Length: 192
Image 1 (cartoon, rainbow, N blue to C red):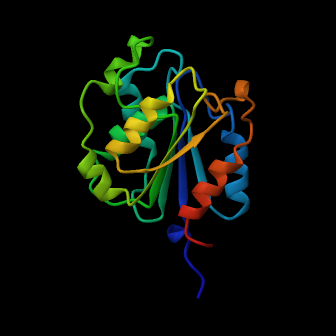
Image 2: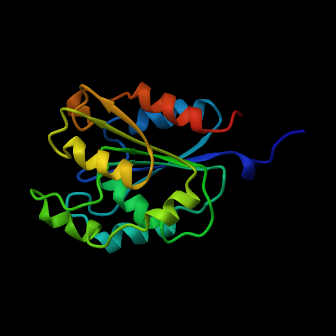
């Protein structure tokens, strides 16, 4: 029996501060997952150099059209907290998420982003609707120090993967490809 298009899995990738869908490892990961038959959407968030919380949240509301067991999410840096804010307003369970260099508390050196973390997360609800949760970080991340990501993982009761080297997992850190993330998300995805 052939599966219909609507039952195919979809992966949404949410970029971070000062990034675009063409940044870092996003195009590579999109290409890799699409080659296996998964649908991939890398959202282009408005004003990435001057992110506005409501603007980014509105963009997710308008462009994430599926919330079901075949929907998977990857957030990078500021994209992680934006994704969590979006998901906490949803009622339907999704398949899973990977948060890369994520944080859910103010970054003292980037006060312009405080609106994203002003309210505490509804972690119980997030745990209920996102059964597979993974947070990845690097010990040498000098943009979002890894303890921020570790505290987020603990709040979400998420699996935790800490890299010795990786920085902020950006192209400048050598991350135009990200095989460990590819492995992590494909383990979550249903087999095609």
